[in-house]
Length: 160
Length: 82
Image (cartoon, rainbow over all chains, first blue to last red; front, side):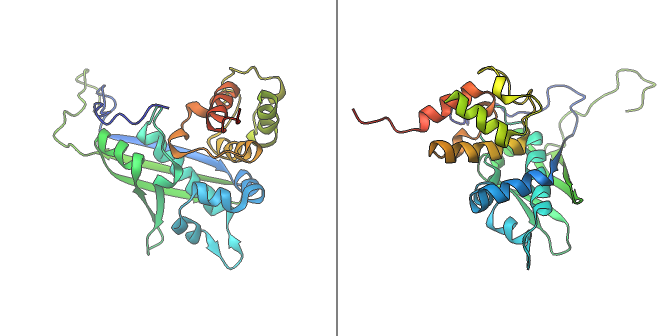
């Protein structure tokens, strides 16, 4: 497997319609997570989730599959924003952090953080949700460089 | 090894097509492998072949086909003593 090429160019937008943001979305079947927990237990938890994430998903009855599913959806939504191609992004390098107010933030480490930096991405805004059977996440990422040329309308009457 | 991987795909991959007849080079994502399905498949393969995928091998490409998975497992398995 090729090692991370740290010398490559930043993955910035190459088209004006790839404007100031990237968005990622993912949906996860909670039953798949429940089955993985049953089949692989701690191996599954330890390979995919950080200790803090497992703690956030746990209560007196153990770990809640629907909460894990929402966090897995968050990881995949972030990967869609990072666009890693053939670069490995281990799941634990994308951590969902629950804020005291109840919302969630994303903390990147390792290759995930490196890809975000190379792309010029700044803050990632995350929203997650779950029902009994499905969990989903959306991530909105903004580019750092505000002086970068903004998209322009080619048709004067078109809204921009 | 290919048939074992096909069996694990049937058990863990939750494909939308029949894994038992998939060609070695068929794209598993096109066949219905989800991102979470690739996790459970990876764990099942590790248990079946007594290997562990290192972080640098956790790419979409490694789990893209039966052949790619077999190549990765072969790389991870120790070479038998002569």
